[in-house]
Length: 335
Image 1 (tube, rainbow, N blue to C red):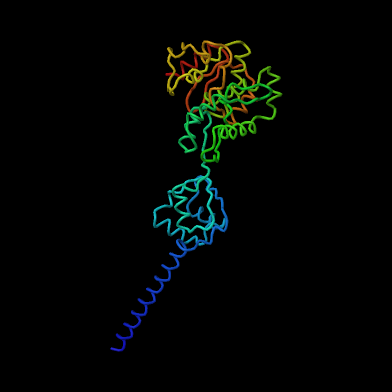
Image 2: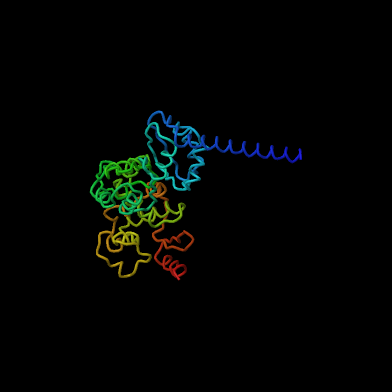
């Protein structure tokens, strides 16, 4: 009897103790996420990198003085199934909010003041405008109009538009930024990426920097392997020197409103200044926005006697000096 009674007392004591622990923990959790408004003590900024885990975000919030209780914050996120909902970007939090408010602003994007936007190499200005709209920055049509209308000066020559000069990279773009502000952000990066010897090279070639950027855009759209870009640039310079049409399929595709996987013989007859089969020389403007490897290749071409190339698969091309060699390569690889 005594043993049974003792065990019962112990059991009851444990239950009471567990209940007290749960009650205390509940009070602590409730106060931590709903009651405590001591932080942030002043308006605070947070940049959430792309690919950051929620635990990393919570730790950064703690380090930046936005939340006090990381464990409670993570528990709340788990209970609300919000861990995967936080968007990468820049946030601005007002002072003295509870952790529930902070989480909801991260989840909804309500405190977000900038978003990450990735511009792939080879995107056209129109594609970039669409990507900005998809990221929630603004209207694609407004961006496209600005990119088409505005211009910059390079080496004393004014560009015809911003096509070719919107440098492909990943940017933290303020939400609601004007098209002019976004264009300035992208073109400033382009200027920073332009090779330092660009002016000297263009003068030596008796070409303008915009012309060489146009050539870089052809490389961007045609080349697939970085180790072939400078060689391909050399092919273009050789053909320009000889007065040969460049015959670049990508320039014809640029004239179409939608992407085409194959260029037909009928397409080759299209009446356009961008048709480099019908017109010798460079197209009027860049046909895409080249990245660093293509820009570098255009300003540092590899010298060769090649005048032709054909795609042979696996990201590489077969280069030829004569039309006979080129036709043999076509017969071999275009089956």
